[in-house]
Image (cartoon, rainbow, N blue to C red; front, top):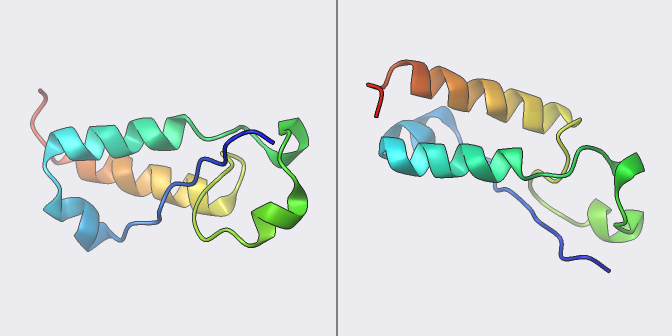
Length: 78
């Protein structure tokens, strides 16, 4: 079984406390999530027990991605 990559959900307040470099690293983690369960080699039973984001096609991923982008919009470009 491939290694399960899970991205922890962060609140707006948590994201805003991170420096820009850390927010960008978090965005990179989000972008490394698998596309979908249907394209994954992961076992559904193991996935159901996970707390966090695994797939880009999930509502959680999409909401978290928008949140990260909104935080980055208010930061100076590096």
